[in-house]
Length: 344
Length: 111
Image (cartoon, each protein chain N blue to C red):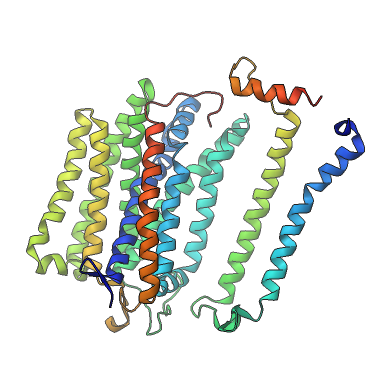
């Protein structure tokens, strides 16, 4: 087993994938959230402004999903194969929803007809909501465990992915993204739309707080394997504590109208949620509800040591580059949104 | 003067299809030529199938993608046609951007 800085390669890849998916959640989270609240805004100009708020960045943000998926394929191909084949139809529908979100944004403003714009508005909102829900449902299933046999093949029925826990995780993800998205939009707008969005921020934060509370209770009561590590390592309790404080800081920053702080707290809350999940799952990646010895771990699902080593070098160069240009794009388009001839 | 011959313009319009055809022909060659191997000499296509995905699911996804892509293609043709008919100038005439003016100077010389 090769090591780098006292962590072996599979563990490093676990961290890389965790980091890229966390980056994706923080970045595309607000795009999807902005889409999910789109139909709550009634005026044409409001909808155009919010579309342009995510305009320059949404495409680059979606790239992080590709990086995460690619890293999963390269580093842990057995997990990629098992999970994607197990949930084949949901994944296909997820892809179609991604297509529809992208084209809704691009095609919406190409025609002036009311029915055209309304159609793409509804398409944009529904696809964003379904994408957020699907991401949460897949995460929930991975956390809960799926019926995979010794070869990693799925042995359950097609609708297994719709269980209560996964649906709760899905709804919590949607609420989280809606809150995150409305905070971002509030940073980017002014005057009347700003006022309307502050109300939406408050409501979505309450929605998210309720969801995360219910999810936490349900997890502690009915899904014991998801709290074993933190239970046996009491020093880890600071992670959920920090997460709760981050969520509380969101409301505090919002009342003080310091939206950048609220956005950062929201990003921190997302990261800590995913860190808790990662801590609980490691070293398993996909749990098998048939038999624990069929679990896919970072060790039995990984590529060869040579592949992992080479790709770690690429990841070490590539991921910082992506982070740098992402920051550059955000810095270039900082400030409030102003509509002009070239806007959506 | 070459740019003023209508018969040549017509050939150029049809010529846009040629790279598409070449591209597709290349892909057909590559994908049918590689059979029965997915990884040449190491893995056959029939051994590379996912065991948990049924034929019905694959058919469903194939039909779904075909429908979605036809829909997208139709939209593309419609919007592209509108844009071509409208021409390269912005609809709002009172925008004075140096870039737009530079572009329109280049197009005016072709008239």
